[in-house]
Structures are given as structure tokens and as C-alpha cells.
Length: 330
Image (tube, rainbow, N blue to C red; front, side, top):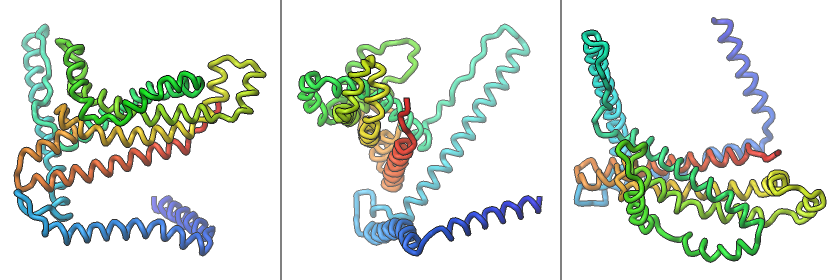
């Protein structure tokens, strides 16, 4: 084991030396700036926040600083751990009870009920992520094919462009009542697969986030090199072959730019949608804490604000990474 650890350490040290030796002085300076400047910006922000927060008095007391927010984030984690322990005990008790019932009567109909406790902060984060990904996926499935069709036919594009410009700036607060009424009227089931609040939030996200992808896809398809289009005509490629071999390889960068913008809008819209639809996600968490009005509410809301911003940043980085890795070679 010692020999293996020594070999790993030597390999890592050798790799580090090779990496560092390959950097020129100018690259050293550039890499240092890329790491140092964001760190300086974060420290300046934290310092300003720490000094300014006590000066802002609200009806619930002074505005929370970084220390109070950090303490509440730890408390939210402890609440999540305690909730999971209680849920595990609840399930275990039901399994033991069912085992005793089946021992007495093997034909008995036994069930395990879900833990009835309220969702924790982390549970609500997961719910929000699932909702935004579902809404974003639905928006992409609608926007990309329509964008390709619009980009290939300039007459069709001219006909629908006014509608796009009309519906694109509509706020999620305007869509939400309409979506709520439609979902309530059409989604009726004794054993629903999804909660109505989830569908309402998801469809609202879809309606607000599909436009950037639709527009960018249309623009990217319309901007395909005319020489490539002429080659496609000469070879008499079928419509689907033309799209796969000519259109998509040229328009993928624009499509992914639209997808990145759409995902950012989807995440921003979701919080407002969850507040009004009362879907158990981050938006509802913020609203419940605002209604609670306790001395800890402001700190908890700030935890949610930072979580929303950080998750939005990660989603954008993931999309950027996918964009850099994807190459259409069909």
C-alpha cells in the first residue's frame, strides 16, 4: 500500500511539474488573474455585505449578514438530516407492522404510506430542479423543430414572426392564471401521475422560455452558407438528409446559444411560478418564509436567494460545457 501511495504521489508531482513547466511567464500571469480577480470580487462583496447589513433595519430586525446566513444554511441542513431520520423510522415501523400482519395472514393487503412530513429545503431544491428541467425539455422539443421549419421557409417565418414578438415579452405572472385554469379543467384524475401545481409551474416555464431557442434556431438555420444549400440542391438530398447533413451542423452553435438563454429564463421564471402555484419548490419556500415573519425568515430567504443564484450559475456552466463538447457529425 505504501509503495502504491508513493507511486501515485510521484505521478501527481511529475504531472504538476510538467504542467507548470509548460506555462510561460505571461500564461502564469494570465492564469493568476483568472483565479485571483473573481476571489477578490467575492471578498469585496462579502465585506460590503457584512458592513452594510446591520445598517438596514426591517420590521423583523436588522438585515442578515453573511454570518447569520451561513448559520441558517447549517440549520437547514440539520433539519433535512433530522427529517430523513424520522422518515426512515416511519418507513421501518410500517415494514415491521406489515411483516407481523403477513405472518398472521399471508393474504393480507399491506401498504406503505409515504412520510407525511413537510418537504425540507433540499427537497424543495430537488423539486425546483426537476420542474425547470421538465419545462426546459418541453420547450426545447417545441422550439428546435419549429425553429428549423421557420428558418427553412422565409415566408412561413415572416407570417409567424409577429406572433413570436407578441408572446415573447409576456410575463409568467400573466400566463400563470390562464395555465392554472386550463390545467384544472383538463387534468382530472382520481390517481394523478403529477400534481397540478407541478404541471402548472412546468407549463408556465415552457411558455416563457421557448422563445430564445425558437428565435436563435430560426436565425441559425436561415444563415446557413448558400454554397452548402446549392450543393444540397445539386445532390438532390431529401428533406431529412438536408436537415441532418447541411442545416444542423451549421446551426448547432446558434441553437445552443438559444438553449443557454432559455435555461436561464426558465430558472428565473420558475421561482415566480412556484410562489403563485404553490408548487413545493424554492419559490414556495421563499413565500412561506416571507409569510412566516420570524426573526430567522430573512436569513433563510437569503439562503434561498444564494442557492437560486448558484444553481442558475451551475446550469449555465453545464450548458456551456455541453455546447463545447457537442459536434454534429451526422
